[in-house]
Image (cartoon, rainbow, N blue to C red; front, top):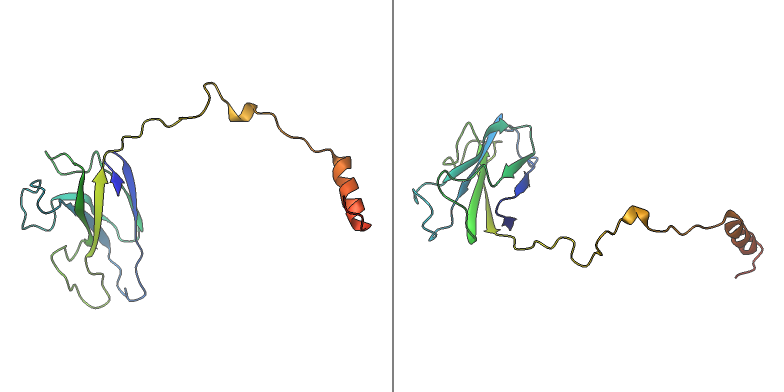
Amino acid sequence: MFVIGSNVTLGWKYSNATLRPPNKVSICGKFPSGSNMSKNPASLCDWDIAVNISGKLLNYTWDTVRQGAPGVAFSEYKGYLMYLFDSDYGVNNPVPGPGRITPALFWFNLYNSRYSLTNQGVPSGYTPSAAHAVSVRLWAVAAIVALGALGVWV
């Protein structure tokens, strides 16, 4: 589940079977079926999240505000789809060739965060760095260690 209006860090890795890693990867999204948000329900992708980024990258930060479908606002819905694929072969090519990646599918949900009380329960004006520190005297530690070495337990 991702919060609408947040930045989402996506990460992936290639398996040992990937003998020919992609030069460029792309990521696209698809609205949930039955949501009536998709302008072309037959298409695998409704919007681009990342296009032709380096295949050497293993993560990407998706800005859900700036990288959504043009003219369509995200809404709380389950069943969004995301595809990661080799840009040279496209999302519609399920078998790009031996040693190459096939389009990866990821299901996700979006929701609006209604949590705004980030400091609930923290007293007004509280500063953690101003709290009193507990100091331990060196002689007390040395005495405990010496008593322990002598077999005397406190």
